[in-house]
Length: 264
Image 1 (cartoon, one colour):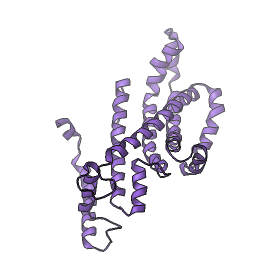
Image 2 (tube, helix red, strand yellow):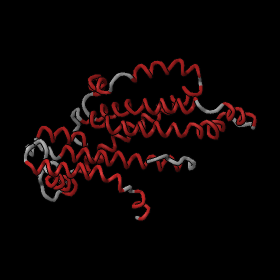
Image 3 (cartoon, helix red, strand yellow):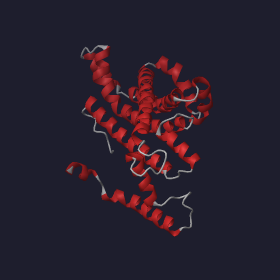
């Protein structure tokens, strides 16, 4: 508990508290209708009801866990697929020039297409539902993972490669003892960027008509006039995104203890 409190910077609380104060006074003034800007009190009631289901204020009363788990599963599937393909192609592209010449130009060309541009095609290919959402998440997360993995693998000092070969390291040993440790910081940057993008594209995918998920809650709440539920779902996405980022850092530190994680 003491370690957790030490990590909290009081200065970082100033801006959120300022926004909360402005929100309170603007809502209390009555100049903006409650259906456009609900009061903080109403919002926190709805937030607690979303979690515990005590007040029965909305159709989503007590349904936070099931929607959260549905969204987390989609992000996990899409991000895992992107990490698998992105890291594999990234390391191949970074270390083998011929593969870079074959793959890299096409990847960078496709990367310029905005994510929402893939939505109609994804719905044609996969229909409305889980597969479209997972596809959009995987596609969006792939590019930062691939680019950073390729950059890290391509920037390994040649002197280290030569030293490993002189010491008799096999290709697999050279990868695990020289290339991977040298490229690891770039790989982690790509994974963290990809994970952040995954949460953003989760919302886009869930807006297509899935039955459960935080993005689906946001869309349904808009149509039902439950305005308080929209920021409630947004806050949970932010919390889950931050927690998953911290979990990813811890996992990377377990895999490679020398990785410090940078500034979290």
